[in-house]
Image 1 (cartoon, rainbow, N blue to C red):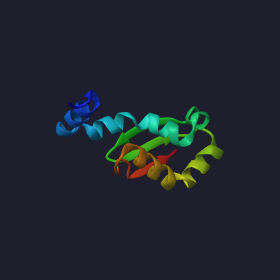
Image 2 (cartoon, rainbow, N blue to C red):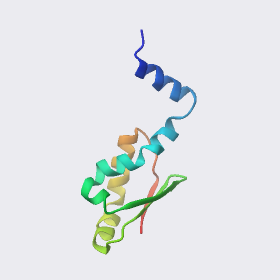
Image 3 (tube, helix red, strand yellow):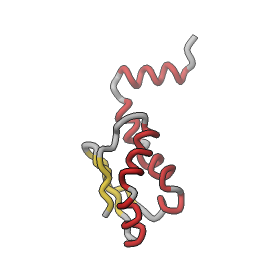
Image 4 (cartoon, rainbow, N blue to C red):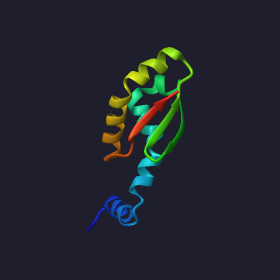
Length: 91
């Protein structure tokens, strides 16, 4: 007998909704990777065609996150279970 979570996971995959589900979790992944405090100082503006755009009003944090873009991308993709984000643009 399959657990309900296994059935739901299978249904999501069979209906090719896994990428959409992962996209809906990007704000949570972002918060987990950068931490609660920094996540509260940033705004995810959009996610389209593999590009995540994040607004960071404070110059110091904008600079710090820009330097860590690739590391952040790798960590978010690991949480998403695939190559969801190809690029992160910090503005």
